[in-house]
Length: 66
Image (tube, rainbow, N blue to C red; front, side, top):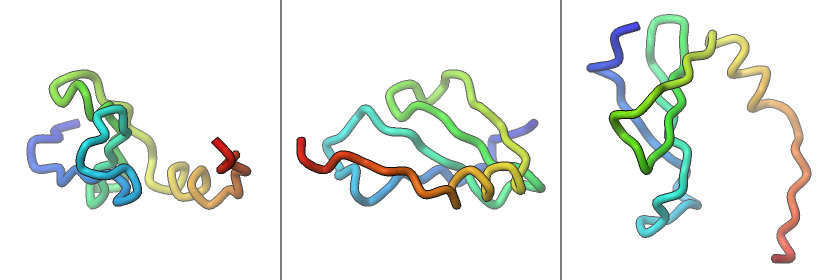
């Protein structure tokens, strides 16, 4: 899949100084790209848009204590 025109974004919660983040490219035809923000030219995982929506719609408990 050609990702040259992909618009990558990461969570605003990750802050500008966080390098260990995941970036997501949406708006691709029927797909979503996911990459490591530390390696912008590295490999990209590509998921079907429906599969990505199902994944992110799940409630995932998190430990905010530390």
